[in-house]
Amino acid sequence: MLDPHPELPALARPAQRKATLGRRAARLGAGLTLLAAGLTCLLAIGVDVGPVALVTGLVLATLPVPLYVFVALRVDRFEPEPARLLAWAFFWGASAATLIALVLNSAGQALVGANFGSHIGELYGASVSAPVVEEGAKGAVLFAIYRWGRHHFDGMLDGLVYAAMVGLGFAMTENVLYYGSAALEGGVPLAVTFFVRGVMAPFVHPVFTALTGLGLGLAAQSRPGARRWLAPAGGLVGAIFLHSLWNTSASVAGGAAFVGVFFTIMVPLFAGLIGLVAVARRHEGRLIATGLEPEVEAGVLSRGDVLVLSALHERRRLLRAARREGRTMRRVCREWVETATELAFLRDRRRRATISTAAGDQIGEPQLLARLRELRGSLGAGADAVSRAAGERAARVAALAATPAGWYADPWRQATWRWWDGTAWTGHLAR
Image (cartoon, rainbow, N blue to C red; front, side, top):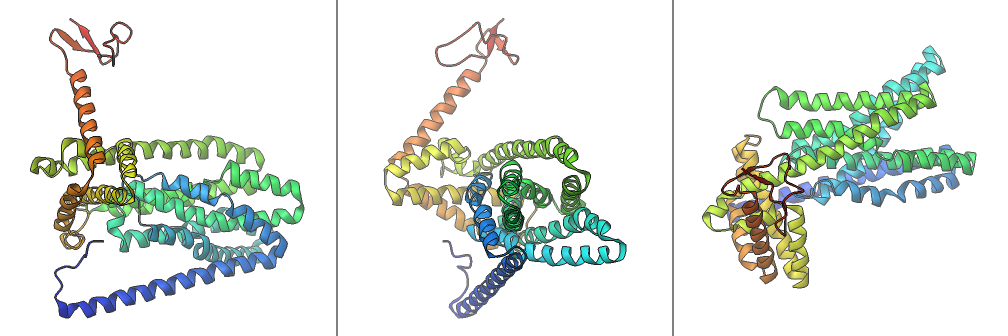
């Protein structure tokens, strides 16, 4: 781990250690608070449904969570987020956000129901209170990460990952309540509830909160100005509206409306987010290639190195080659990839003026450059072979893309079934 403050004199080290101990104490206190909030939620659910139904709901709610988390973490592959922040997001959603929603929603629905009738109270709770309170509570941790973990919040993919984690945590604890309540009614209601919430629509809470995450991600990519403020606010409003639409269709409008909203809005929106992830990944690959161009010109990296660092499938080849050379070499390759990626993202943030010069100096571009040089010299023969192969493949593709003399480019692939050169379609037509 690079020392973020190598310039501090020896006399300043005790103050730095004291500040570090203070941060650790604050994290410990926050962690204990989240634990207490989570246990309070489980206690409240247990009082409502009983111990047997609580255990049943807890098992069914937590069983598929590792799979959901694994899928969510596959979103941001170029620059995986720190496990510490991902855990904070998940457990905030599973504990504090859920407790806030439980208290405020119950109190608001009871108050409105007492004054305007139980039907109006239920409508208010489902369509107004729950969307506002729940999305506000879930979004709070995203705004906190954006504010205090800014160098770990680079764009929309980061926003999606953090939103997915807090949404999965919230949905897990909420499912304990729903599964526990269904368990009191018997096997068929429990099976139906599990199918709807755990199989058919486990992604609804992550999708709601994803709009807030996208808004913050867009703000992270924006220069200082109105968009930095409007994008997060618009994302939060969009999350509240979508949540309200979903709750209204599920609890007020009836089964046909629920199915209609699910298939005409939620499923297309989920598919759209998958498409956005694919586009954003390609953008990040190009960003890394552009950000590392100075190292190619300086001779620190080869063209093949940059191709490996900016393409996920090439990174997988690199790690497979490193695995054959032992655990130490795999660790070196991983750190090399992470250092190069962090350097490219830092330069992009500076180019777009989305971080201050002081913040950039604190992260340490000179340190990243020095570490990148050191790690590149430590890579083994397997990594060198992967880089050379990547460069050779790129050269062959460029040669095939070049228009031969007397030919013209074939963008509509009219020559696809007329000409085969033995390895790939030429993509050109004779004049």
